[in-house]
Length: 297
Image (cartoon, rainbow, N blue to C red; front, side, top):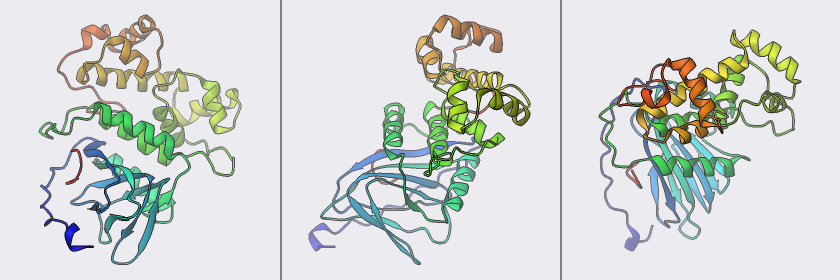
């Protein structure tokens, strides 16, 4: 590193308290082509997701070095071999980062890393979709928001669940459909929580007939896919209504209902009250979504 670009002394990262939530975003942001940018893979007990759009750099640990280029994703979990991500001065990367906590989030991330041979950074064909999702996450992220309410449901934390689901259930590169299991089916329904409940589309993603999907899905989930998906959607709707302040029509759209009146009817059947009556400063009940800018990250 040239003397004129010598980095300032690193500031200590404040220790973030553990969270009881399954998903919790600590920091979220985007670094755009900073020639001498560098950052630790992660710190304390948090995980770090990185998505590189363009440019290149290197991720260096005590035991290995990986060249990082556009179209690659990274998942770094706490451990002995956490390294440093550094941008190439001549071709600095443009990348998103998301440091996260939560038992379910880290368990999912650890399984993804294991299934990919333990590599922290890897090429990912679906990075454009993830980039769009991260941009949507940034739109609702509040960098200055304190973590003083570790039990508070936030929209962006639930969006982290979908981001990890994208990594956990990628389309098979050879064109083979993904295996149909209880876990993969539940992940698929969560990943498409904002879609209309189209069982034909679900069946197509798994490469089976709709009839076979319905029969096997009921065995795997202990209930029909339609009812299971509806419960997931209503749980997420309750979280959005309680915490986000979005209009009811927008909440309906975000859980896959184009008709807000029909959404209200379904919501009342599950919650016992209308969506507008439900809204308030309360913690959302249990379910699939239970209750800063650049560095330091």
